[in-house]
Image 1: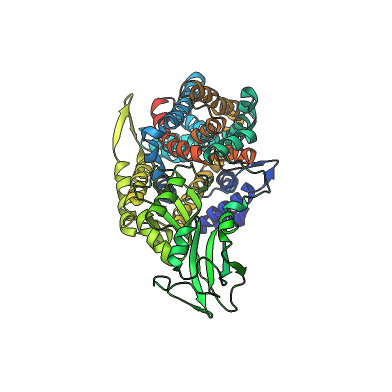
Image 2: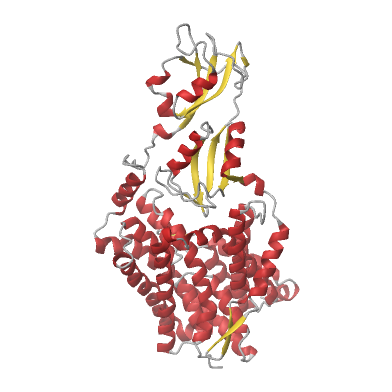
Length: 569
């Protein structure tokens, strides 16, 4: 113990990184299907290590929280502003109602049972599983006209409330989304997911686990022309244009490629390399030639390229519409092989609506991809370097917005640097999706800032609160846990039925995804995906999740302003 105390005085940051490492290790351990997660694990490990009496400069906490919340805003910016459109109005309202119900439920418990500001904020952060509330509420507490000791007690209570309420806050939505609501409504989640996928695919059936649709797979094959083929004497361009879902990649004559852009016609014994859907390559239309092997030593280079959609002509269209548009513009030799939104893979179905900021995976030759890329958006590789000019401007704007104050019942309240950086991140993330030359922040960098920033922040919170946590837990642990159950379940219950009967979100998969997204409940979403066994819940979840992330984060200052009780010293 003496060694630990000495280390705490010499290099307190050692404890911070140990808390992160042990927290993420503990967060990966499974109890049934429940996983604690790295953030909650880091907070708990921080509390344990904090018993030694470690002091870490609060500026470390503030800096990393600002980076975390900016990254959250940046990543969700395109989808958040997309959710403000009339097309997504009912899903936006569903998420807003769920968040508002969560706020009112927290306030009801706080006012009804005399909870102090810190405990109320911790209750919200844990029971609503929104870790960012810890930061935004903590910033507001620091601006209150109370003693430093009271501020420390309230910040400790935030950590305690979060730790006590977080576990059921994570489990509760899983129960509601995968068991309670489906049981009450008599829904079979898997069947409903199949039905929705069939609707989005224009009536074709969804496959069972372990099966795959070979007709949608991309392949490259080689065909040798023989005497009597109808394509002898015609150009490769004619052949390319005549067969749907197939691209002529190369024509080999005596082992050497001929230029596809010339008017040179096909001859007997020419070998044609073609890429396309397996269903098209297997069709009767391909009987004009004999399939053969690629010549020895020959390499045909194709590429999978990830392009972020920015062109408004494509945004809001169905996936099938993008395919048809590229065909009409003679850019027909590229295949859409994946769609990603906010880091989540979407179902690759014809009726899937594409949004600005979506990441499209395209497969084809580099030459064809270069042509398509110009009309769709910008490649991910183009964002491999962070635009530090706009990153610095974004952080500056966020911190300045955090200085703006207003009063609630005479109490000064502001969104703080956390809320300000969230709003700034939303703006700059949207700017990047519409003007790709500006504000580049690579996906890997965004994910690192978000995950590591939050881990460091909660680690410092846990370490700082450590000495007082056990006392606070003994005083109100059981009652706080019960309050957390109420805050977790009540908004979901009323929010679900409001969305179903008032907002008319009656597709079962979409209704359940609204609950998970409106609660910012990633574990519940993962459980719903497991039950659905396909990606159909992702589309609705991304809209409601983006809205909930913003609103729940802003509840921190509101709770501190509306709850007027301070803890007894």
